[in-house]
Amino acid sequence: MDFVHKFQLMDVAGINRALSRVASEIVERNRGIEGLMIVGIRRRGVPLAERIADKIAELEGSRPPVGTLDITLYRDDLSTVDIKPVVQGTELPDKVEGCTIVLVDDVLYTGRTIRAALDELMDFGRPRRVQLAVLVDRGHRELPIHADYVGEKISTKQSEIVKVMLEGYDDVEQVVVVETPKQ
Amino acid sequence: MALHRKNLLGIRELSIDEILTILDTAEAFKEISRRPIKKVPTLRGRTVINLFFESSTRTRTSFEIAAKRLSADTINISVSTSSVTKGETLLDTARNLEAMVPDAIVIRHSSAGAPHQLATICKTSVINAGDGANEHPTQALLDALTIRNHKGRIEGLQIAIIGDISHSRVARSNLHLLTKLGAQVRVAGPATLIPPSFDKIAEGSSGSVVTTTSIDEAIDGADVLLMLRVQLEREASAFFPSLREYSYFYGLTAKRLQKAKKDVIVIHPGPVNRGVEIASDVVDGPYSLIYEQVTNGVAVRMAVLYLLMGGSQSEAVREVNR
Image (cartoon, rainbow over all chains, first blue to last red; front, side, top):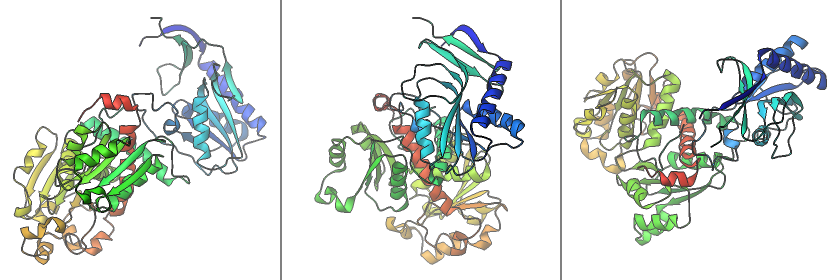
């Protein structure tokens, strides 16, 4: 399907600045990196988590462990989608008991992905605290979930799509808002 | 990525893409069995019936554990305690089970084609867990997963399948799978236990099959040895003079193993007849991956259940694709 390009929300520098700010807010709020684990949600949450951890390392001189979460098996819409998503697996570097976990995702929308991620995380144990960092919060929540760290907050129409494109995954690094063409 | 079919009846009808989809999904599922809580909610509310007309330890337990780790409910029916002993036919049993609206029936039967027949009358997904001497698809898939884990590939490998070939559904499923993925397969066993025209299985694939009656020829330079059980319950012993002679000519011993590649791996679908097709010290030796196969079996069956049942049920039914 072709999308109608609407506008660019963030460019390379914008994404970089947002991640730097999120990294320093994480360190500030948690008073350092003691017991901290950064966990990216597949797919685009994973490189974002790595980059936030790199920036925390620059600030604090040591890098928090980074994990990845594949929430496919915890989705609430599997029975309504025809194509089964590829399961790529979850990797957590350490036990979650007693940790402060910062979940990282690219876009916060309905909140259902985060619900699934929380359920999966709890199956690994009892973290001390879970926080949420997202690059873009676009509204339209369907569950009582909010982000602790937000790169950019915008209001969108439900027909719009926020596309996060990252180096290593896409041709150009940017965040754009596109819309599905009207029928 | 999806498996666009309702049933898994055999490897023969699967495309290379479908085989790789199952193997890649299984690879991702291995991690779930190492978690502190070995369960994910993806098949919650689905029901899997294990209908076994033949005895089984590994396969039945493996399917049950796989379903449970995906949160499906499982029911096991073994024939000795079912109405089959009162004379109910297979199809009547199936119709009655289907009236209770399960989502998948896993069937093992001594007659080749029993799962296929079931699939024609059932809207439920049917998974073949072994039908006579025809196919045992999940066994071949777990063998392939084990080989791929250790060798990094299937293509171009020299793989020997040794033993009672004619009674073996494991051999048939593996021959289809390994040749589709481009392996060079050598099939060895007593002349009375090698079906004619077996080398034709490789036709149209990138692999090849050669048959021989010499185990040493099959082992020479092999990357993988797949040993088959002598199926005493199918009167395999009528095809050779004695078990002792079979073991002497076709048993895998540590000495024979030396002719294979240095990093050879030995796999066996179980149950093992120690000292018949394989010596005890080889079973417990450093080249044997027999228990790893069992671990991989759970991941493969989780992948199959997920791919057949994970999507919408109506879609699966619409795409009746046997």
